[in-house]
Amino acid sequence: MTILFYLILAFGLATIIVGLQTWLITKRAVRWRGKTIRFTCRAAAETREFQNIKSVNQTIWGNAAFLFDDGKVLKLDPHAKGAHELINAVVDFLDVQPKGST
Image 1 (cartoon, rainbow, N blue to C red):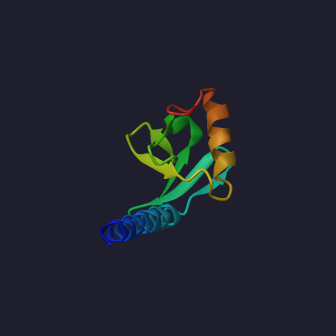
Image 2: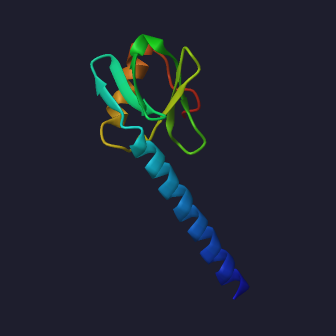
């Protein structure tokens, strides 16, 4: 019974973490057109150009993280609709490989 309790607890926590990550990613409302990215950050919409991106990293959770010149970070789930194409377009524009990828 103790093992069952810890299994239920572990899966419950994992469900909460995944739900929170999904909510945070969808809250960003990322839009991409040409070489411009528009996303929501703390209730204010921001527009950034590809040339403002310093680097593309991969987080420990597998998300792509765009680091901008001013230090802001935009995290994307690479499995979200259109995110893979955006990541590839940024990587091709910057002509680098994402840091942390294999």
